[in-house]
Image (cartoon, rainbow, N blue to C red; front, side, top):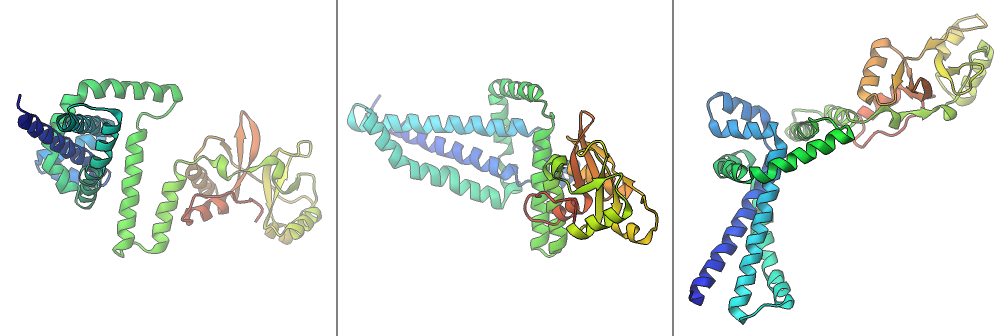
Length: 334
């Protein structure tokens, strides 16, 4: 075969690899920017392209897997084209020539195969994905014999680790909801306080209450045999509005609390102790906060295997909802 034909085929192979890299890299970025409500509306209106995209949002593993396999194929095509070009130019190849050709082509591949398409799909995710959904679906069917066993292995490992099967879908949903909140704040639909509350809900929802718990050994409180006067003195010393109470025979067995306001109003030597709701250690922060609100309880006791691990304050969890960063531990004695 003449050299000029080989050179032409190598150039076409290189362009094909860059085009595939641009398509799959951009599609992956655009996928995370899709609007699920808009897809649902268009699919119900009979838009087949929107219906296919909506199916992929319910099976994100197959979409991402297709993108990864497609990018690997694109990189292989670019490498093969570069190797053929070196062979045509010098008549032989070597490690030095292969490295040099890679360094020369890398900026072009990165610019036109990664950076530029990602930026375009980021700005117009819906229209860009709809234009190429037929090609993407064809690639999905072509790569399915490779992608399907990979997905089976991932699900098998998830079962071994005890992770929920819907974890990718939930993660995508949280990301899209966070984007919606950010857009709403940018357009003036949401106030700063509402935006911080929404961000706090998204941050707290996957966290267990243990990260905001005060260990039993560090809780400030008194024995349930302490008198009203002793509790008031303790409250004045530490500046607390409620005093945590533990069993007399167990200094880490916290089970209730007494309000300072009630101690001041009552004349009984043995004041009323409010019981703490108990929560397993794996309970989420939002679930704990919801139950504390329903029961109008200031504190809750965190237990594991029937033994108290520590306590958590309702006010501390509420404060975490309005913070821009992850929640930190709040002492239940403020």
